[in-house]
Image (tube, rainbow, N blue to C red):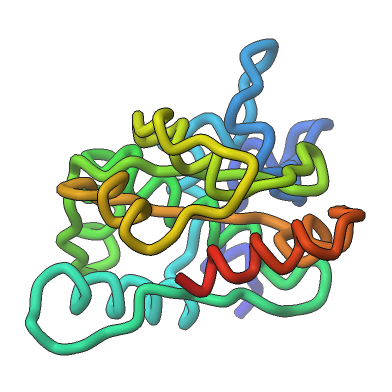
Amino acid sequence: MSFSKILTPRPELLKGDGIQGIIDIENINNKKRKTLESSPEEFFSLTYPTTDIKNVLHNLNIRYNSNQGNPGLFLLEGFKGSGKSHLELFVYHLFQNYEIAKKWLAEHKLECNIPTDATVIIHKFTDFPLDSIWNLIFEKVGASKFVSSTRPDLTQLREALKGKKTVLILDELELGFESIANKSAQAQNLAFLQM
């Protein structure tokens, strides 16, 4: 039996432009043209529930729906083109566009009940280097009174995030750290993330 008997190519695959094969997190904010990253419907239609996606969904579901201790950090490592940015974009759309994501989850017989009121902060360090990650977070969660050139302590962080659910997606974080010339600022950012 030939593949053409069991597979039907997507229409865009047969067009001259084809499918954009590279995910760029910064395209979420592209207002000039429609991109895959900025269209949750199109993104989910092209997303297959890989083992990595199922693992993230499982752990998020446990984190938000049980008393079981579960890590809140997902470290994505791999070679260029291995799907890290796709997975980051998946988590972004899962939280930002949950009604659309629920349809995709149901279609693939998957479950993940997450808060619908979380603040999602996504940042690509190679495009927009930062000297302080805490200021990015404080500005996005509406706690600008804590914006400072020095690292906040744990009490300040708890007060800034009190009652808020926050999802932090940091793309190219390692390169972002390397671009901070001041070693003291690097250490402050690392200590903040460990907090």
